[in-house]
Amino acid sequence: MKNTFELNKALLNAVAAFDYEEAERLLVAGADPLGSSDESDPDEHLLGELFCEMQDNEGLEAAFPKFLELFYAHGMDIAARSIPTDDGDNLHPLWMLSFCQTEAGLKVLHTMLEHGLDRDSAEVLVNHILLDMEMCDGCEIEDTWWMESFSCGLKMLMLIASYPIIL
Image 1 (cartoon, rainbow, N blue to C red):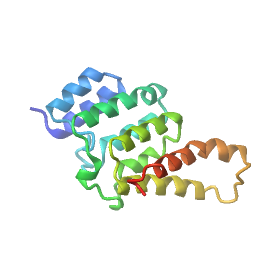
Image 2 (cartoon, rainbow, N blue to C red):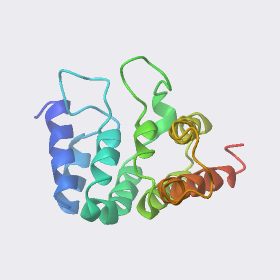
Image 3 (cartoon, rainbow, N blue to C red):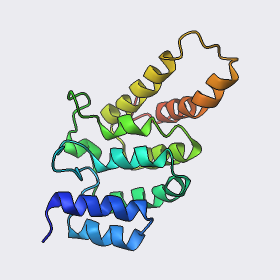
Image 4 (cartoon, rainbow, N blue to C red):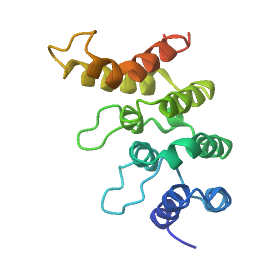
């Protein structure tokens, strides 16, 4: 049997290749979307890596909600894992979702909220979105660049706020 890192690396590759059947086979075999695919960095999270991959890959962006549903169907539970929201060098996977401030990122966030995303994880995402907005110190709301850069981020914040369990 393959070790967990090998299974997780294979899962990362299967999702990146849009191979739904292989991803499901690997999940059944024990791959963990909240685990690491790198033995040298066991605290990293495959889910966060996939969020980063999505930002530059339109195909993955379009296919990812289906894979996310698959992860949930195989028991992915971010809250139950008690992933630290600030543990030094390693980032919570929801921190990475902030890099996907697109319509696809909104769909992913909506799916996660529908599956009961916990308040602490949602707070990690909100903090990163707000941090990125603050980096635009001096930008005006009327700034075309600012609106293009953060309109989906603002929608993400509104979507999170629309779930009473998060508030």
